[in-house]
Amino acid sequence: MAPPESMMRPDDPGLTPAATRWTSQRTAWLLFGPPALMVAVRWLLQLADDRQNATPALSLAPVSTMSGTLELLWPVLVALAVLLAAGLVIRRMGWRRVMPVVGAAWLLLWLFGSGALLERHLNRQGLFLQGATASATAPAAPVTARVMTRQFKPASLRSLGGTELVLQVGGLDIPQRLLIDDAGAAALKPGDTLALQLAPGRFSGLFVTGWQASPTTDSH
Image (cartoon, rainbow, N blue to C red; front, side, top):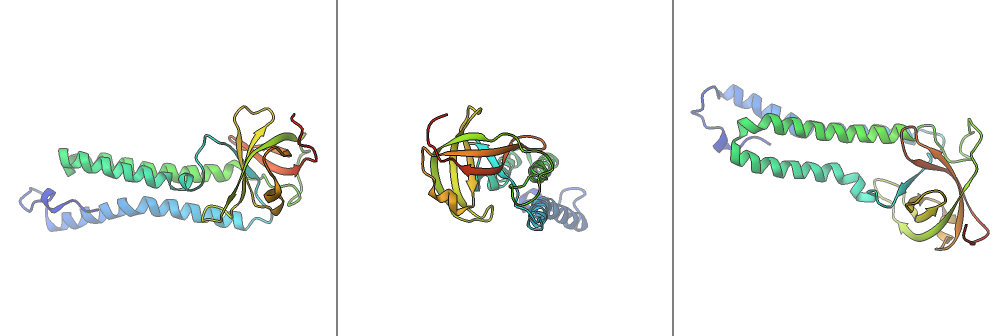
């Protein structure tokens, strides 16, 4: 995004053609480089997941957290907000005075997004669904969860889709969201109970390493 011509007057001191070309190149790198880095990080992490011989553990997330498309696009939405705010500030204060701050904020935004992708990958590293790989430690006692709602999620760039369940998990106050890509999950209905095998992430959160429909629907 090169500066408007009205902000780069030929009679401005020190604004030679060579400097103008260099500034435009630097602006282009700053505009497109950080998003490209985040795309590359996401692609490499997805490639690493695809090469695993085991199925990664399923994420158990509170219903209050972002999900689906919003979780994937939040860096883009924030970036658009930053660009809009930057345009208003530039119009008021001038390109030369604002550009260093805007450039730094833009770079940090995409670096933060790339770091969040890496943190999410490392957080569940080594956690897999039972049966896909041998467990290095003895599994913990299963936890009972009651199905509150069930919804089919189509496949997308983010996941293979499946059945999204909202569960009331024993020991957790906030209902949890769980996406299961398994034909057996499609037969579940509100009121059914599950036995979940849970494991903590490396940094935070809980993951499901095993699940089984309970033969009873009595409350726990």
